[in-house]
Image 1 (cartoon, helix red, strand yellow):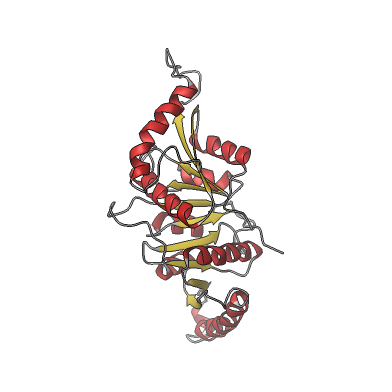
Image 2: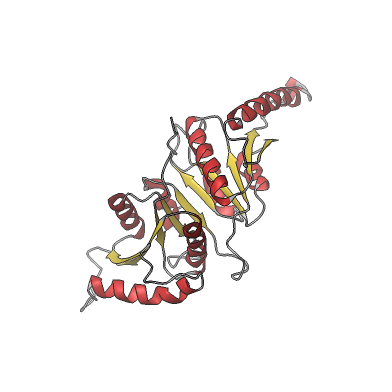
Length: 300
């Protein structure tokens, strides 16, 4: 299971990145984590691109970045002089690779970012900086959209963990349990039994009967998976839906205070691209934050 010793926050002063900072500041109060704030000035490279005549030195970029961060930090009772904070600013031809390189060099436990930054508010999630980071990052990525109410507190009151009984989802579930303890929040396990498309010649009751039996088996298996987490001060609940995975997951986490913790691949995604349609839709449509990874390591 990954450690939350270091959190890398991609910060471009957009509303969604300020929202991500609010969650990062809250996590700082709950753990001994260190927060790395990083700003990447995108400078496209190519034969038709020109370098600035007098580029600002990197150290100057970092000084300016740290100074600009002060107002945003003070809103969360943080100060740039806090020894738990690190500031890094650099130029790069693309944001996501720069974030991933930094995360690898500092061995951070999580990357946090807004899903709509300066690169394009109107872009779909797929193909965005956040999607590219999640696809290539060695660590889980925490994403959050711009809030409807910028004054709303960035609180997490429930953890929702989709489970498809694959090894990646087991790792995600273990991390969800740990976060539920950190946030003192209830944990909700969700499994979706997909409704099969069957020819009408099978009869009107066949799919219903089959899916009901599958649902009952899934409920038993889900409780078995959650049995190691239940107990103590942690409250665990179980829900099995029938239908399409992404909409069912989103219905299970309707509030901005719901954190979804999920793996980007599972039983359906082993042979597919790393980010499938289910993960993409959840990340794009979730009202609250999402913590996702290609693979959450499982504890022994």
